[in-house]
Image (tube, rainbow, N blue to C red; front, top):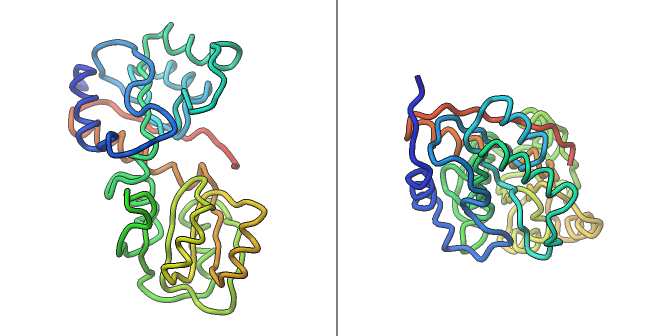
Amino acid sequence: MPASVDRETLLQALDQELEPGRFQDYCPNGLQVEGCSRITRLVSGVTASHALITAAIELDADLVLVHHGYFWRGEPQPITGMKRQRLQALLQHQINLVAYHLPLDAHPRLGNNAQLGQRLGLIVEGALREDGVGLVGRLPEACGGREFANAIASALGREPLWISGGAHPVRRVAWCTGGAQSMLAAAAALGVDAFISGEISEQTTHEAREMGVHYFAAGHHATERYGPQALGEWCAERFGLEHRFIDIPNPA
């Protein structure tokens, strides 16, 4: 039988591990929707979509742990339509919603960037930003741009969009999961050969070519699947909880 833990004990442990107070984020980190007070079953996922909530209900979960939660800065405040349906499902089934955004990007072991680096076999040398969001490192051996694109596709199960930065091989790499295409210039200033992110904008193509940096857009969802999963496993191991990661397909 799985163990259970008091919700506040679990939240305190998560806050201590992830240190959300260090970040100026776009959303609240930690408990976003209050449910039952004891946690036995935990579901993790990338985004708190209705599909993920439905899966959590079917699994009789007590808590949903995600990277993308609710109440983003600038979003409409009325509880109507899609937002009402999501919140109603959580509240009706007394499911807690817990979300960590930038703290989960930056964690040196459980974070999205740390986990992506592990899957790509990258050797971490430092952080891309002072708050730890984004990393800089290198490949064990240099390879061509196409070869590295194939390695990313094999690791993530998704073909990345590769913008060639020239004929030079890939040795030093910077990466930041999700919508971090605006960090390309900061990465280029560090002298890297390649930059990996989730998304790409129209101007990113021209910037990568002109800066001479290979750019790999590997998918927002695809690059951020591993942090929530690792954090869920950490909770399960620490408190003896039942945990399941639910991957809701998303091509973006």
